[in-house]
Image (cartoon, rainbow over all chains, first blue to last red; front, side, top):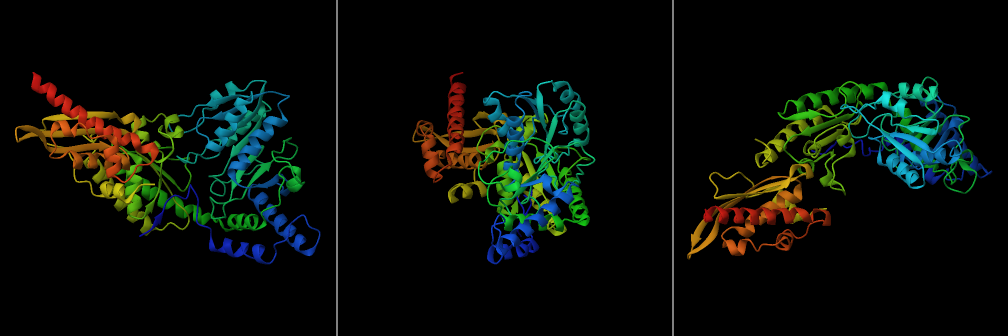
Length: 380
Length: 127
C-alpha cells in the first residue's frame, strides 16, 4: 500500500487541474502581453484566474500579483516593503517559527543593515502578542508573521496581530501558504496588508503562487523587466500554471476540510494511544490536515525511513534527515527538548487521503515504533 | 541517499539489542545531538588471547547510526581486543558501501563506542 502523508511538502495535482491547464500549453499558448488573438486569449485566462484568487480572500483582482510560488511571494513582500519604506525606519518584526523563506529574507536584510526582532511563541506555537506590541518602535516598518505554521499546524491569531499593527500604523504581511483555502481569510475583515499564497499545496501545479498587496501599499519590485503584474513583478506570466492554480482554488470545498479534520483527529487519537508520545502544536487552533507527534526514545529519520519501507511518506523535524544537525527551529521554539524534537514526525493529509490509508498508517507506526524502541538505550 | 547495504543493515540488524551481564559497556553520544550508542561486549579467550566473544549495541539515532552500529559488531565479533580497537570509521564506511558526508560522524561514534567499551574493560581488570 502506498500512502502519501506529506501534503505539507507538496500535493498531487488534481486531474481537473491538469485538464484545465493543457489547452494553455497546446492551443492558447499566447503571451498575455501580445495584442493578437492568441495573446488576448491568454490575457483573458489570466484575468479570470486573478479574479478567482482575489475572490477567495475577498480582495480586488488588481491586488493580486502572480509569482513563482510562496518563496518568491515572501521575498517580494518582505524585501519589497523594506526597500520601499527604508526612509521611514529600518526595523522589522517576525516570529521564531517562520518558514525558511521568511527567515532567510529577513537575514539578508539584517546583513544589509536592517534590524530584525524575532518574537517568541508559547508551547503550542502561538506568537506572544504582548511581546509583539512591546517590540514595535517608531522605526518599525513591517511585521511578518505566518498565518499557520508548516511544521506543527498552529493557526496564528492574525486578526489580533492585524489590530496591533493597525494601532501602531505598521504594515503587516502574513505567509498563508499552508492555510490558504483551509482557513478562511477575509482581508476586508482582517487588517493584513500582504498575504503570500501558493498553488502546489492545494493540488495545483508547482512554480506558481501569488502575493496579495493591499491597494495603496508602496512596494519595490525585485526583478527588472517588462511592465507585467502592475509593474510589480516582471516576467511573462506562467499562464498554464496560473490557470491551474485558480482551478485548484475553485475545487476546494467545505466537505474536503471536514473530511481531513475527521481523519486528522482519528490519527492524532490513535497515535497518542501509543505510550510516550506527545502532540506538538495546538489541539484546537490547528490546520485541518496537520498531525505532528513526537515519539520519545526514537529518532525521526529512522522512523521516517521505516515508514517509507512500508510505503508511507511522512516528514520529520529531526535534524538527521536534513542538511544540518540541529533539530527543527520550530520545535525548539516551542520549548521541546532536543532529544524529543529529534523524534518528531509530521503527517500531512489531503482530500485524497482515505480512512483505509489512515488505519494502515496507524497499524504500521505502532509496529515500527515498537521495533525501534526495542534497541533504544533511552527506552527504559 | 543511502546505499542498499546501509538499508539492509537498517532493516535487519543482527546485533541491535541489550546484552545481559556484559563484561563492559561503552556509552557514547548525546541524545540532544540525536545520537546515542551503548556498545556491550563480552570478552573470552582464544589461543591465550582476549577476544570479543559477544557484542551488541543499543542505538538511539538515524539510519546511518543504526547501520554503523550493526556493521561495527559484525567486524568486531571474534577479533582480539587489539584488533577490535583498531577498527576505524573507514572500515565501517567501506563495509556499508558509503555514507553521505553529513552522516560520517555516525561511523565515528560506533568506533568510539567499542574503543570505550574495551578501555573500560581493561580499567576494570586493573582493579
